[in-house]
Length: 197
Image 1: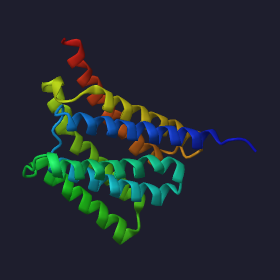
Image 2: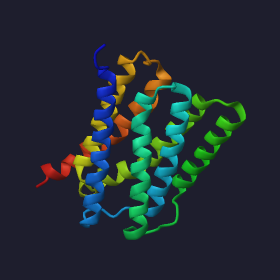
Image 3: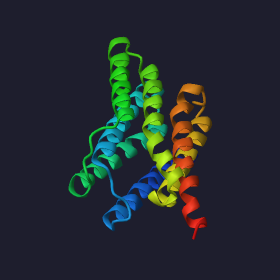
């Protein structure tokens, strides 16, 4: 019995994902980024719910591991933001994201429908990423591209893993594809900062 390549891909995806967070936090520590406490609190909350719901419907620890690793890293970043970041009142779209997260919790609790809840969380995650995308579109210097590129690569590996593990139906692919699109868009937009020099 040989090594299961999907387990190796899952471990590599998690390590790349965590490397992105490590690099982001180093950049924040050096003053190259200013983590917003409100945003990171919201993202950590969404990540935790996404990991729990994804795990509940996929029943696949290997493909879910990236979501648990991301949750832990986002909680760490939130704690870091508590010491260095700034708190701002939630913006209108952040209230909508909070409402979507509460709807997802209700769907999961009342109907025991983890897949449906995860799809609502997917919408919340994408909506929560819009301000970052728009901000980097207007000013590519707001974000450095490498963490976003690492996160994109981790989600791409997760997509490959979902397919290789035979879990390639739409629901299992939805969140990793959304993660790739969201993080990849920010990475591409942030790369413009390098081209403008």
